[in-house]
Image 1 (cartoon, one colour):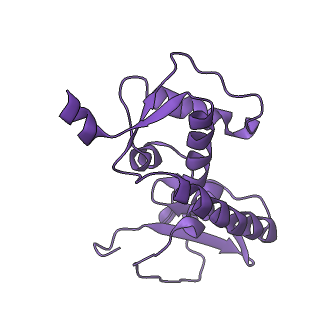
Image 2 (spheres, helix red, strand yellow; image 1 turned 90 degrees about the vertical axis):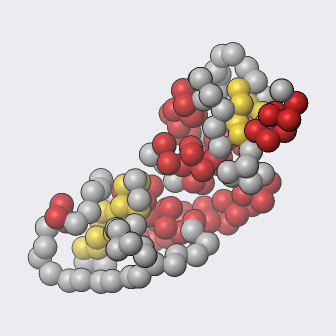
Length: 169
């Protein structure tokens, strides 16, 4: 970035993505997040050689093949843009619990339940905005938006505006 801090790094082996980091995300989550960004005002650099990956990237292995990853990333970008349009400003509005207990809806994607539990725990004591959820969770923004959408639909959460709450109080 403009401070020369590493934002993202991807390691390829024989043309296949093998490891990745995007800010605090690693592995496939990092790869997918890279496709969700609207603009990347950063400097890109490339290097080749036998430098060990651990010397420059914190990561988990990426096992899926590049075609599956790329198709998933592109589909995810489209879905993310649709979800993003239906959500309020990710920094201006807070998610506040509306229910006292958590129950993942039976029709919701089961692979998202661990993230839903993580988000539920993060909102135990205070309301949070979408931006802070991204910083605190180890999942890409698309998955966070999917879970938040499910939890709003199931009435686990509701949106609140901190400015309005202060005016009323």
